[in-house]
Amino acid sequence: MISLACANRDFIPMGDPTGIRWLDRDADYVLARAYWHGRGQELSRATWEEAHAAGYRYAALVQEGQIVSCAAAWHYSDEAWEAAAVGTLEAFRRRGYATRVVAFVTAYILASGRVATCHTAEDNVAMRATARRAGYREVAKGETSDNSTA
Image (cartoon, rainbow, N blue to C red):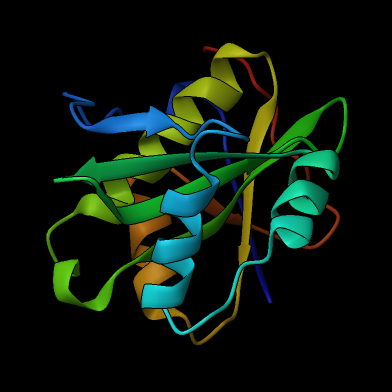
């Protein structure tokens, strides 16, 4: 597992967030379920509710009534929140959509005064590149990144 962090000074905004929005816990469940199904996973209402209760807040790039890319801000501690659950439907990959959604989530995390973190498998080259494009850097286990603007 690779640990990454992004502080204000390292963040790389992705510009126009058109089409990216926070998913509503109640109103967007059906939309989220269709997205998860399109990625070969089932999403029950109970799992969706449990994720929100555990501190996940989902943002997505929505095009023509469907989620094409999604990421979550996971509020797991008072100091740091995670850019998590990042994915893009296969037909929409390699267009920079995941980077845009990760940047949207990261901007929210940093604006909330938290350090943005991300964890991914060592062999997940695509996620590591996505995180780097948003300003994340790999950190050693136990290392922290401050959230200063300098």
